[in-house]
Length: 363
Image (cartoon, rainbow, N blue to C red; front, side, top):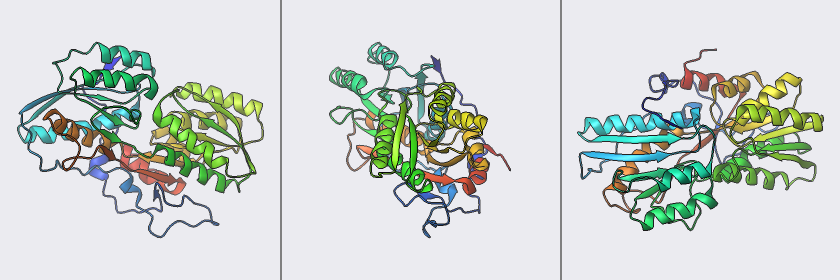
């Protein structure tokens, strides 16, 4: 378990380079996902620079206090949540400029564990934190815990990519509200690329994690629409690159004619791509997010497309909503019960621009 005081600035050049003039034909989630000559891109496709919004300003809300202390817990130590924390730090700095100090704990285990998350939540001191924020590790296990906390007087919100279940009494959620659609859109792109024929594997991620499970359901439902498509494996890699690599190697061994892999988190596209490249296989990979190695594989054509979530906005908006919740506000005119953040599907021609925006890599 660790506490992040300072996020390593792997995205340090991001704000400075965000408004690059170069445009690409990437597309926001929900649009037609296509990149080959048979399915030209939408003429209204967004620039790749719109996938991550580094230009944020605090809204006009006036905090009632000059100091707030929050506790945030997320699934596992991983660069994806470092990017979320970068947005949190920006909001923290802007509040400080207005004379409001924000302090927070930002805690996660080294491996995803609902049991670990339950233990930490149930041992939190009641009066030390203004708001408790939770990236839900397993909605069936964690949602009842959050209800208990609310009943005990804690102010609880959820954030990141995993909300609690629909009956949970948490106050609000900031993050991805369309994980099912993300999985469906990526898989539709895969099916189209394969001409709607072939065997497909799904690497889910962490068992019980709402975002991973929802994407996998979206993938499975999309494949089920096409008679020529078949799911031959569905495995949990527990958000581990090494585990995803091992699973992919075994799946390729069992299915040498595997046509495609749907990857439902940020780690498994990397593990899958390592295995496919090592085997010299032409299996088509689609997956999630902005891992630097994954973007390199996208640029090289090993990965076909990636759905990039706007982690920076998730972090920034989480801090803003937490302040309003701490002041006793409920969802309504000030903030929504669910603050939706975008996902943008990017392709090979977008990879170099995204690498430069996020990591300063000039290819």
